[in-house]
Image 1 (cartoon, rainbow, N blue to C red):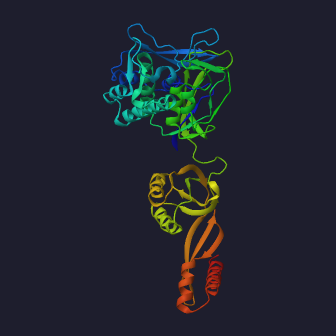
Image 2: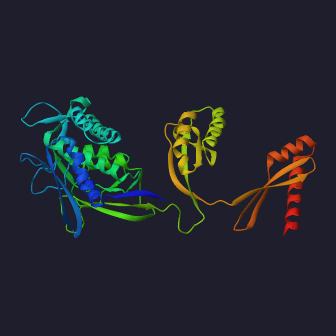
Image 3: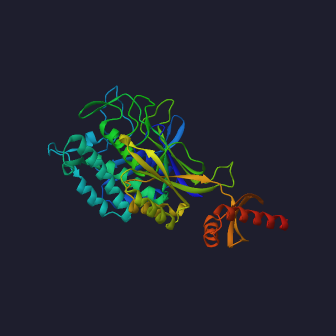
Amino acid sequence: MRQVMYVDGFSGAAGDMLLGALIDAGLPVDRLREALGSLGVDHELGITRVVRAGVTAMKVDVRVRGGVEPEPHGHQHSPDHAPGHHHHHPEDLVRPHDHQGDDRHRSLAEIAHLIRHSALSTAGKEKAIALFGRLGETEAAIHGVAIDKIHLHEVGAIDSIIDIVGVVYAMEWFGIDDIVVAPLNVGGGTIDIAHGRFPVPAPATAALLRGVPTYNGGPDVELVTPTGALLVAAYARSYGAQPPMVVERIGYGAGTRDFPRIPNVLRVLMGERVERPVETPDAETVFRLECEIDDMSPQLFGPARDQLFGAGALDVFFTAVQMKKGRPGTLVTVLAPEDRRAALCDVLFRETTTLGVRYDRTWRETLERRWDTVEVEGGRVRIKVAGRRGQTLNVAPEFDDCLRVAETSGRPLKDVQAEALRVWHAVARQSR
């Protein structure tokens, strides 16, 4: 079995909520503080246990030393829009820098410099820098400016750096690659940001949630922040219902709001994925890899199939499909052991013209197989015998052997096949 993490954003998702849930699930706080301290960002990390609608959860607060405290970002503190959990809004915090005002700004390059000189692993540094790059690209596209013009306000930068780098460190510490995310509840209503009033989700959040299943489940406030959307989209390997798993760790991360009936928390479940359905104990786990191709010469499919088998595929087959704009295409399906998935993806990208490969875990049941050999007029023929729990269910002469005997003896192929079966059944009756 393998480790799996299920992220349940039934009440939204924010960077501090995800970090709090991972701390609640067992991330050592002293190790986290040490990693974040290596950034050289002047801050204090507040970690407290709170109650949200009757559920205890871990609350993470980032305090900037010197008495300045990050506000719930993107909110106007008006009676009709009370503060929620941390809302890192690029619309308010990441913007084209006009050098006006007396507050400090940080460029994406400065943030990348801090991360590169931190104590994170090489992979962790690259992941964190890429996440900020994605944040900057999103904001640059919204404003229609170059990415090097994008800066973060000082307070918001510190808050975002701690949340993003903290989650990157936590994910590396747990070391779970199989991450399944439930559809995210984005909330509802409208939100006031620096550029006006927008429906939930706000523009940057909506852009970062592209490709992520979401729904508007209320209440009428913003429940998913840009940082939450950024992190969920970056780490999710699949989306949907909780997979079959044996839960070993549970963590709850709290938002700032405390709704009366809905716990304002994000939940993570960790444990061992159940690799086979309980009702089919004879099943084995395999990966199914698929891609559609409509721009490749038919002559290349045969060699590609041979390469796939050579790389460990259990089966390869092609299906005619109708693709966009009415073009005929070919669906390539590969069944593979789990440890050959990556190698087979490499073969598909190298030997075909596909631009992407999708894969999922599935199960199969197979019959037990063995080879017998019989003597017929003109030579030997191997017989494939398949059965289950001691019962023989299928018997088939090997085609290539029958063809060889037919060619060398001048006999009809069908006669060789029939004789091979007769001989095998006769021998089987005698051995009973």
